[in-house]
Image 1 (cartoon, rainbow, N blue to C red):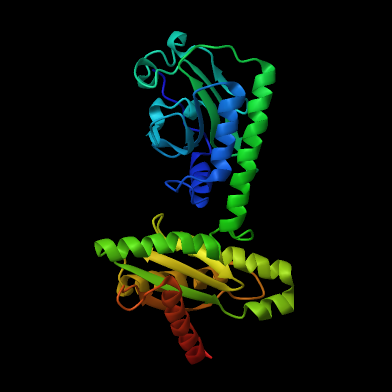
Image 2 (cartoon, helix red, strand yellow):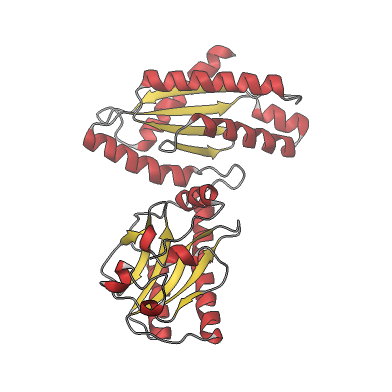
Length: 319
């Protein structure tokens, strides 16, 4: 068996995939409709929208297969995302790359596979729209074009998802994306007793930067601020721009004291940035930190509001 290679842009690809907030999400008709059409159109028993994570392929839509994921090392889709064209295996039992693959030798006994890469505008292939059969079959150019055309519909849904949950300017989560992740985080914290803390940050004098130097400079200030903030957090933390000059970070497995130390480091990074860059303004921020306590914060909005009030209080003291 030949495991799939790892793309050169794997880190960026995984970051983009996870930013969509689709992994381990519930089935959605907008994707299931496409796999049903693919199954019917190509007369196959299995059609999937497969997303390739670090160690697994996870099925956002699944028609005809009794599984939600498999290992990436045995996936056909892991091979398909390495190219731009539809990846076709007409008889896996006779292909030395796959003949001893567990998905071929055992259930579902794959013989035929065709997968169209899901290429985002960034160029990252996040997964495939694929069709599978336990019977060998030919797959001609016209059929490849049809599968590719169907994959474009999946891609359009992924792009829409990205626009709905990602801040277009900074590339971090927007309010909606933050709410989806933070609510899951709060539920887990309440259930398992995990600690977490919310940091609410305001980029000081942002309006003054915009009014004095123009929106292009203001936008760059937001981008630089979010980049420095991203460097402060871990992969498990949740960072977002709520809008305008307001940012939030949900620090996982962190008490308030730990969060305060991290913010101190971030403030030092801002000072260092200002010293090293010859811009006519300085990046500086006010912040409020609230440790999440389920008994005190019945909702995410209450938690955000509490941190916002603390931030405003701290900002007033500075002024």
